[in-house]
Length: 298
Image (cartoon, rainbow, N blue to C red):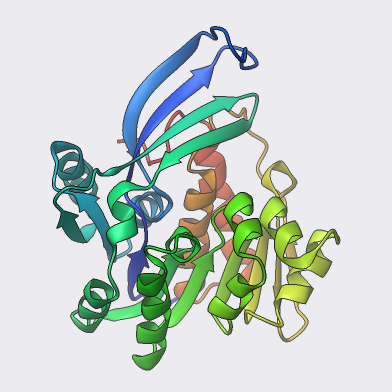
């Protein structure tokens, strides 16, 4: 395998307020929980997991000009992420309340300064990274109208400079809101990552391999993440590859998909075949669910 190129990750930086519930949420009453504050955001998490795998990675994002934003950037830099992060006065750094119980999670989001990410900032950062070979985009950037221009410019700038591209579809509910426009925005990306809910929104209620095959009309390669059931890779040559998920005790699923993406990208960009890429992705995703929080443990 060859050394992987620098990976530019474009998307969100978030503070996670993570509540691990002791039981089902008692709506209108009290539910005991373990609560912690930590760094989050799909793009920031993926960048942290990539750095943890030894990849050279630059995060392009936006935070508020506040103490929280400075903390989020500092913790990413400490784990080896190069941060090209704009600070926006008058806008808070994004925050997500994450409620997790019994292997499921529910998120309540304030996008904050993430909505202020600009196409110009993305363009300048991509142009200033001559060692970059790949751009990975969190679809949250596309799904929010405020940052959509930055997301579209990220993919266009990558193509203009000969970088390969990947998109993580992010979340089923906002995908449902934007509808089929999303497929236009990500057309001809090299790799599209979707979980089973997102695949159903984009390709209908088919089996995972059929969903992935349908989506190869849009992306060159599609990976459907199936949680404990493993993952499926399909590409335009007709190749279908599957891999099981390691059997582990699930503590918290927050960040598992971001870890999976990091494992998949590092293996694939090093020249690994689809099976090897899925295996490394599954191993990293399994590691993520065995601990609380969305980032690699120190």
